[in-house]
Length: 116
Length: 115
Image (cartoon, helix red, strand yellow):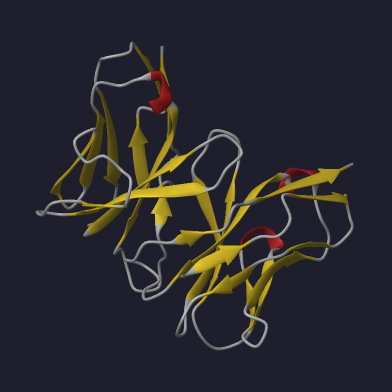
């Protein structure tokens, strides 16, 4: 079964509003979570690395004030897209690691965000 | 700079035929290598990984991959393709860790298996 749960799977919002996406590790403690963005027919772009109890590390070119990341517990990280605009429409995917040594990163099923 | 290359945007193969999806990487040191598969509007599913040891790695759904250090390649293979294998495949590398570090992804290869 799924070890990383991402919610919602899809969301439609109006321009100017904020949207929160949750990423949960279901049966393990994820010390690190990663947020990716995927454009149509393109690869995954790492947005930020989320570490429990500390500030997220953002990749170059990603606006930290627009994409707020909170990793308040070892099982939950959230990505909030603030003041969303149509160009923020994309597929957002989280991943989590740190389960056991032999286990690679596990990915959520992604969230399709559409900003109208 | 560290990078992963998947030279083919799309691979077409007839059902029952062998398939190969190519991947080369440019990473210093001894990287950890992965293959993931993505179905439409879904996240990524782990297929297999290479950490150390035998160069031929076997993974889920009958897939395998061969690590070639001299050619810095990690091609994904399957002896007999199924229509249900049609999906988007990503090669990825992690420079330092296989369970806690970020992954560097290739651009993806769309596999289309025809009946």
